[in-house]
Image 1 (spheres, rainbow, N blue to C red):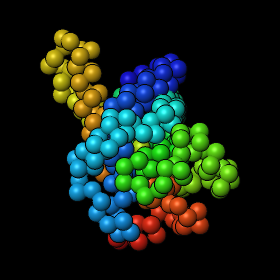
Image 2: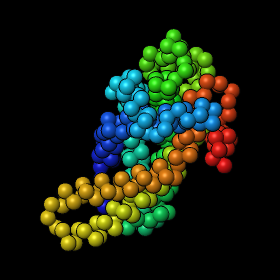
Image 3: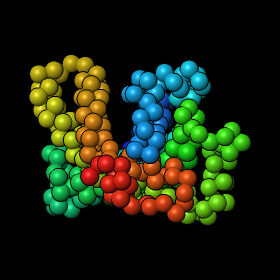
Image 4: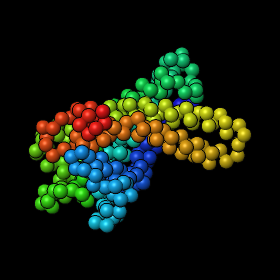
Length: 267
């Protein structure tokens, strides 16, 4: 697609991150509650996502769906900005090096996969603390057995209590699982995204020259949507393990995601 100014990729990622939280946080709240409470230890608390959503709305209202959103806005906005910026710059650098200084639009797995995995590994250090705070805020609402006196009043209170009880390293609980999820997931996401976008452009651009901006938007939405489905299909078990690790009340409990999945019947 040619080189673009680096700041544009970071800015686009920042805007995309904010939009992701606004639209996606209620779905994420439901996902986290299902992952936390529908386990062998807790039994089946919610029949499905719709039942969980109804329970939240009934007891907490719409604000219950946005519990923990503050840390998400900070974490996801910066995460998305860094991810797209690092991925774009790394991809351009690798592409030019492998092709002898010649830029090309054709997707190459040996460029896409390491660039996306590298970007994913970097953002995991931003995501881990913000997601730990988000998850702990989310699970203390509907379905929580914690007395109100022991619940966090906000993300800052959650962060201070976590560091007081577990030390500074406590806010990075689940860091390895987050790194695995983001590295693998983003390698899958960008591979699907780049190939779908490339082949859709080949098929549609030649026949539909008008409304090119609208067409680009449609291709971007389709490519990103399919990439997102591929991302979660590949790493959902790791995400379940991360939620359980980060919300475990016992700080001595295992942080090995594969042991967690084995104990939850994912073997």
